[in-house]
Length: 403
Image 1 (cartoon, rainbow, N blue to C red):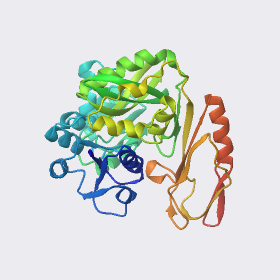
Image 2: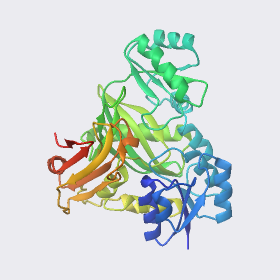
Image 3: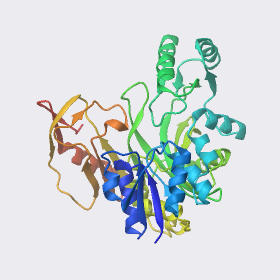
């Protein structure tokens, strides 16, 4: 029986753990101790700090695993790379993982390889910041290089905002520097795919529903197919060049991109599958279970056959993260929807009595909805109907999730 180690044990890793078990693999959930659902779902628990590459590699060797993987978070990516290197497993290398996990290392590699992306400057102090703003102009983005998702990223329209953001970022980061980038305004979208020996196994661009919970947009949903199919070859070329620039030879990846004035810009690429229900979007599109495919590739199997449409028209699908506009105690979830074939998922991670926060980023998610159908228009109509039938009661006030 093959043994797969999944790094992390929060809700995002549970579908991956369950997929490994369906395939007949022995699933190991690796994380620090805690009340995490992945431990209950797994065949075996491995208590280890997944931010410690050597500790994870030692545990992977001790357990003699056949694959190491994760999804939805960056925390264990470098450790995954170290374990793959040490055991000779199919997956991202430690060097590539380190580059993908640091926005400065990524940007440096992209620029050297000619990947189209935003201009940037490395900033260590207030004088550097002033110089960067002189060069790049406003608006600009101040970014921590080592935080995942939209955390540690601030759009700044004035110099005063930039200086305030710099103070925040330097307090949040573990590094002694941050980045200031030119702000590229356009259509935000994403893409997920897989590399095998440095070549794309598949690439699926998808639309992104962005929510302005703070100073930068954070994804709260995705959909496929992406409307701009005529841009597919340009997207493939850009993403391939970016992955090769970082040295990503094997494994799944997620990237954020921007379409502006008919040209595609790369924002970042990560060495793991995307979050916000992206694996489910991919599963619907290709008619496979993407979590199972991730496990298969980690175990060294050829997975190219799962992404051949062979003339089949792919399903459209759309996802949406459920969040609140309020802070307080969740008193009741009123879900008046009846489950139907086109509702792939309608689940709530939050429960009555939980303290909830106004949605700012993925940490504030209360649940998720995934709809599939023949067309995007059909999916959007059904999503609106489903959301209209959900109501949250928080500290005595009710909040309808419909428009």
